[in-house]
Length: 302
Image 1 (tube, helix red, strand yellow):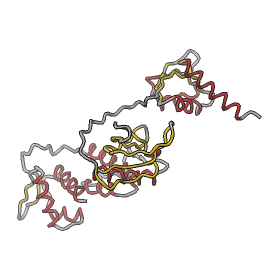
Image 2 (cartoon, rainbow, N blue to C red):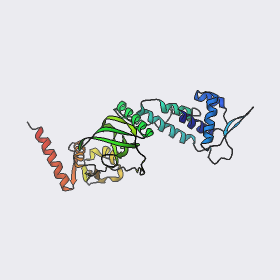
Image 3 (tube, rainbow, N blue to C red):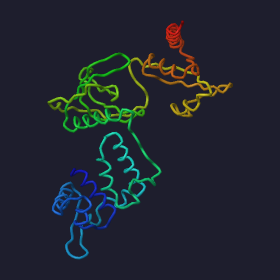
Image 4 (tube, helix red, strand yellow):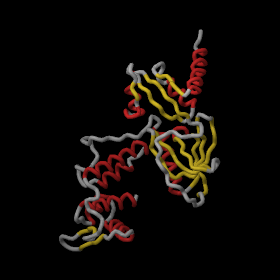
């Protein structure tokens, strides 16, 4: 893709004083004429690229241009490349690895086995998520609605949204956009979506508010509870809540106060701990869980 090549050329010029069009053509596997057209595109974008002919000549960014040539240090470049590599773990393609290779100047900046950081964003349902990401990305680029069946604790619904952002949060992928049914902006988890389809017509221009990342679970039915966890579950509680939110009791147990999207989801979460978790309050949430526990126990009575 041309945009990948332009990013790659710019990155190389930021890190090397001068490079020939032949070198760039070989690196990106295109003709010299294509490289010269790319240089013209960069110039039109406001980045002053100059070309010097003859021995010792080459392509470079105009001397004194305000863009810092050290903008992408080796460590920063490795971090960028690791992030790009992580996108391949969900896209199902080698698109970003190819871009990484074009951005890399030498072995010191490439993502290889010697790197200390490896990011894998793929879920167990990698193929299905990758297909959804590709379709939603296309919808955002073409400004087209997407329609899908959505499964939530409140049941199964059919939704149509104008997609604006793909978000990786809470260890899962989400799409954020304007829901035509609710007439408001909503976030939907990709693994809960089925029958995803792209509409035939583009949606109208809209003044879209800035997306603000919120690490909490929020819904109209959200509940806040204080839960006592057995000391044996400290590894999981720290993993899910962090050490700063824990209160330690005299007997070594852990108290955590947190908000969950709704009471049924909270009850299912508490059940995942077996008898190593107990809801301390509020009382109505505790009583509600007691009813669930009794119903469950009755199901297994012989």
